[in-house]
Image (cartoon, rainbow over all chains, first blue to last red; front, side):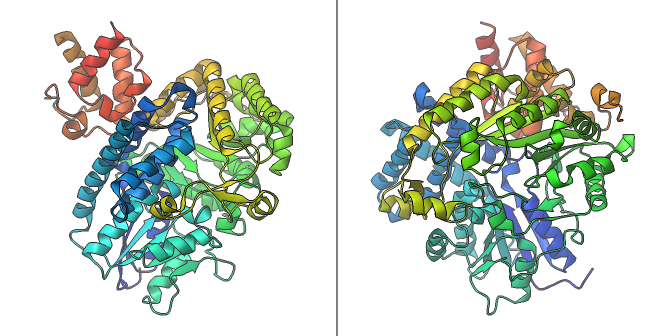
Amino acid sequence: MQKEKPYKVKLSIMPFWSPLTPPMGIACLKSYLEQNGYSVRTKDYNAISSLFDFGGRYIALMKSYTPVDRMGNIAMVGYDVLMAHLIAYNNRDDFSLNDYHELVRQLILNNFFYEATDEAIENLCELVEQFYALLAEYLINDIKEKDFDVYGISCYSLTLGPSIFAFKFVKKYFPEVKTVMGGGIFADQFNSNSLELETFARKATYIDYFLLGEGEIILLNLLESNFKNVPRIIVSDKTVKKVCLDDIPLPDFSDFDMNSYPQLVAYSSRSCPFQCGFCSETVQWGKYRNKREEKVVFELRSLTKKYGKNIIVLTDSLLNPNIDKLADALLEVPPEERFYWDTYLRVCDMAEDMEKVKKWRKAGLYRVRLGIESGSQHVLDLMDKRITIEKIKSNLQNLADAGLKISTFWVVGFPGETKEDFHETLDLLREIKDNLYEVDPHPFYFYPSGQVDSESWEKIYGYESIYEDKYNEMLMCTYYKLNCQPCREEIYRRLELFRERCEECNIPNPYSLIDIYHADKRWKKLHKAAVPMLNDLIHSGSAIVDEYRDSIVLR
Amino acid sequence: MEMERKGIIEVLAAIFPNQTIDIGDDDSFIDKLGMDSISFVSYVIGIESKFDIEVPDEYSLPSKLDTLNKTYDLLGRERG
């Protein structure tokens, strides 16, 4: 260990970011900076149930006021409203109370397409007020000792409001502390080429530095520079050296109460080898890189052993390039140390081969998360997704036959999606319902830059702000919609039809542990080979009963 | 009510084996026992199994089912 460096660093992540795994980004930064001599403390405010619970309470309250035929995917779209509401709260003193309430009404109108009552708005505002009062209590407690010189927050769209609150809070009490914002938020609306980032940075005077992209090197460089002669916005672009994934240390979760998290988290690669039109992954992470299989296996074994967990989520954008070699390597793990892993995959030729799928299952694959996106070949082609409906069906059949949990993501209202296209999606859902563990539909979001196809959409369709200028001021950024079909209202109407179809087919969309428990029970009833229920994994330690896994004999 | 109380305490005792379950009707399990999202799931499963009911979605937040009184309400509703 090197001599300790002059700056003490505190890194946090704010609500609302699901605490099903510990936050990996700040755990990676902690281990990397500590390897370089810095003292780093990390904190996940999502692990505080009373704080995180506010998200569910807000959605439940909103649900109680929302007409049944306007619900859509309220578990997810409701968080879009909450996210914007939490940002606006931070700026409400610069506007009239009437404007603040009117903004909340506009948020509901533009996401659920009904006029909320005054009572609904007042009660939602009251809940947000209570949330921030509680967050302030925790923040005071955490910063009062002032045992840090640099305060960083890893920020995502859903955590922006509370992050702004925390930055303001820290800067108010300790103006000399350097505040640094990083995280996935710079992959979408605040991407490096966006006007939004420039506008936000100008307004957010309480944030000293913005770090965009892979954080290890640029944060270290910032600390080493003693904050002299460095720009306020630092981008990990092509000119910045990237970390060698084989050389960086294990993420350090030691500051977290690991009993709060049911699963561990790790990764074997960064960025993505594919370029789907709606996605920002390659824009954020640059060139695709992966770790050696031996390094990945060593990390997974070390982490599961160290933290006493038997399931680990791999956050790779897609594991396709590595999955087969990784499975081969994991088959060598001794039975007493075996664990499960959960990952993102793309519909592929490999999963057409049942022998391969069985090998993955034998090696511990637990859940696959697939971007299906649409049941229309026309839309898949518009997205440049390069998969076929037939392949989707056959992949799902094999994966489900092996008992793997199959979570699927869908985009509703992609530019150019016709009514017929959308009905093909609804038909597909009905046809393959028993092979879907989970269905998570998202409305199509547009950002003027940052998505692979942003520029071409802008040229073809043009775009406009969803909200009036004064509300954009309160939201600190502008949310846009494309001037194309389907229009925004139609997108959200389709989302409602999508939800109705899932309800009719009894396909769940679990967001909480309790939802997962119910979804697992359904999956077990549907598939004899089903992987163990998550709740059983959490409580079983190393004594996991999985007869199907044991019975697989590989050729 | 006494039978229900006894059943709920048994469920809690199984989840928190190292704690004495000395709890008032309105005491929060979160504050008093340190119930978190993981132990909450065990609680819901325990209640479902002990009282042979299915806990509805609107109780799927810890704050909706974190006291004896809230659990009595749920049982009253589900068992008519």
